[in-house]
Image (cartoon, rainbow, N blue to C red; front, side, top):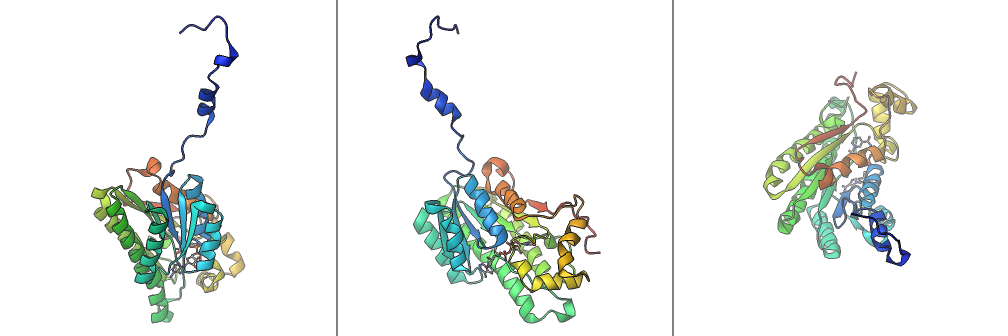
Length: 288
Ligand code: NAD
């Protein structure tokens, strides 16, 4: 290639230059993502992370007003839907609403949750059932309806469970919550197996304690955890930081980036049945 002897500015392919400067298409462009528990701390950050890669986001929560409020931040690229994950009818109705609005769903993040705990002798049947109904039954219902849609679309898809580090390590005096989280984790593995041939990926993110922005930490859980560790509730943040290898507190956006990893086929298109712990490097013996 030889340079022209004279350069006439009117022949300068400026449009080509502008095209080269344009940002590349984002990873989730054209994808529709539904997030449960979206009105909460981690859920809100997940919406942000998915929207930052151009996904259209559907915020689902039992707190319908909260879901609408957070979805409103994304204009036409966001929808808020009421969804109680323990109710078969409510879960189906929310998916129907989403599909009628956007035509389908590609990414489903099952994140809704509560937490309560007590020593086993003091764990009531109500506490046990509440943890297991939202965390085990709820994750099953959200995933089952997702599978029906994803299979029909025949275009793969990603289901991400937000479980907990307590799915792997015994949460101190938290058998009801921890066993429900362990069930979530294994459910994800089973579903990864079932969805694999259809390109439906199912992965799990395990956060350790995320105090910032979390409604769970504004509930009885705060006092229950402090009692389990025999410390003052004000010392919890420091307690969790001190026990990590990296000496950090985990933030909602840390979890959101891990979820984005599994949501995006660019980043994790060949990962399924996997687990990503976001825990600052908690040693195996962390409950002592
Ligand atoms: P959060 O309380 O801020 O958000 C949870 C959301 O779930 C709330 O908006 C709540 O309204 C919603 N929800 C509760 N019950 C529901 C139901 N039946 N149907 C639909 N929505 C319901 O809590 P978070 O800290 O953002 O937690 C999100 C997820 O992360 C939960 O599954 C939690 O167990 C998990 N997790 C949290 C932590 C932490 O320390 N924050 C640690 C490990 C795992």
